[in-house]
Amino acid sequence: MKSSLFKSLCTLGTALLACSCSDKPSSSDHGELNFTPCEDVRYLPAEGLVIFNDHKVTDINGVQVGTITQVPNTTVVIVKDMYGNTVINQLDVSDPTKVKIIAGDPSQCAAISVPTTITSCIDAWLYTNATKNYLIYADLTVTDEAWNQIGILNASATSTIASISDMAGTRVTEDFDFSKLTSIKGDNIRYKILEPAYHLKDATGDYLIYQNTVVTNADGVPVGYADFATGTIKSVIDNVTPLTVANIATLPIILPTSKCADYSAPVASSSSTLPVLSSSSIYVPPVQSSSSQPQIQSSSSSAKSSSSSAKSSSSSAKSSSSVATGGCPTIKTKGGGGSGFASRYWDCCKPHCSWPEHSGGNYSKQCTNKGKSANTNWGDGSICSGGPQMTCTSQIPFTIDGCEEYGFAFAAVPASNGGQCGKCFQLTFTGEGHYSSTNANTRKLKTKNKKLIIMATNVGGDVQQGQFDIMIPGGGVGMFNGCSSMGWGSQGEQYGGLLSECEKENNYKAAKYASCLTEKCNKSFANDEEAKKGCLFLATWMEAAGNPEHNYVEVECPEVLKSRY
Image (cartoon, rainbow, N blue to C red; front, top):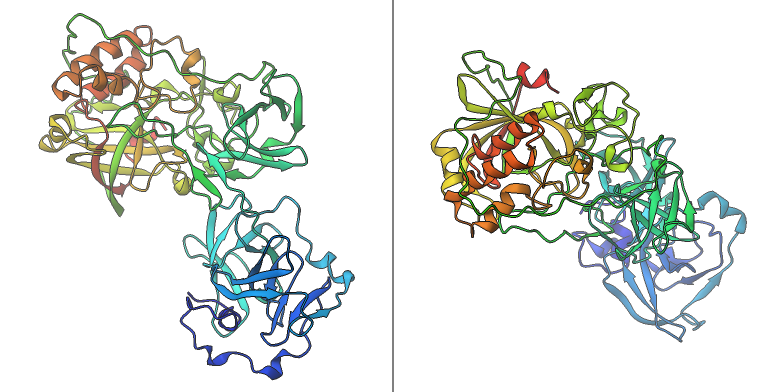
């Protein structure tokens, strides 16, 4: 741990820092304070510590080095360092032989006031510049106001001057004096979260607002519905009584990986399928044109297994716009990769990379008219929150004539990699299946030397590093079911889709997956040939393999993907 608080923490006796506590201030350092508090404080001359009314503990320079815990119904406190280690087991703050009252100057309080909207579940420091508020923690991590890590603190063991770098190591702030920062007392509130959600805390309550309009409290209990058009949150009791109103688009977004969030995954419906919440409506502005009452989106009913024997497709599915080149495009490696696995979804929502604030000018296509009519009204909302825009069915996975070794598709990447819109990756399958799903189908991908080239159009809040969530019709709608207006048949299991349904119906006998899936694709997409071909891609080219593992590397995007992006 490298921190400008070394001496202060050593004063508190912490054993977690690799510093020499011979630097502990002498008794002569424990006279009057070297700063003026804005409130009356309790000063411990023997230890050189200052106790504030909000339970913060600082050194004589005003740098926070710990906290206190009050023993109920007494004047006794326990002093702890920033890591929770007890430094003084019991201290009676009413004992004048140990504690001295130092008068504060109220005029100093305005200068260090903290916006009431900025809180943290654990103790933090607040740094504010002209563009952003940063929360800094004792482990040197730096988060935004929703407690999602966005950087690290650059600090020295010999100076109180520090700066902040983003996750790529690029410095994003000027130097500042760490000793002058305002502290945020941890409120111990943690949020049970299913996926990324807007966070609103006001006088009426503490809310998580999901893109399917459901609003919960911090414990994950539904309390209302959000009208994205007006910003009104209405009671879950009657969907009429207003609870509060907010500009939802401006609210911070809590991710499942936030310091103050506890991710609670929906129950998976297949032993080989992880619930993947890769909705394309994450991080979107509110819908401007919806006039209908918000409703909870629900997945389609589960399809019944046909009693007749399923017949398999006679040929590999091709996209209606497949390029008959008679050979494979040249795939040029750019470098940078790793290992992971491929999951699947198709929720019909507007792609993440179709929003102006995410695309960087490199927009992914968006469509209306059941995914058939592309347009450039980039500010329109997602169908998953009442707007008109959705995924284009032209972005189904496909193959090229004469190039059966390669498949091409679009996919969601981890939300933490949100800047990857329009990037491409080559997935080379290892033959193994994730979540103990290795079988003859996953092994075929390796023996046939198949490689999938994907292009990122979307993000997923719980998509893991190395995981690519492939856009496949019938792959499962996940949390946001924008497909309910498509006129399609059953989409199968909410997580894992039609293939997960086939796994269960066939008692996980992999040899039967392809025929089962083919039958379901033909039935569910009987009125949409394009979506059907995308569904059959999983049954044919991908060998009906569930969650196959792969090695991946970034590549230059081939024209066949760029033309459909």
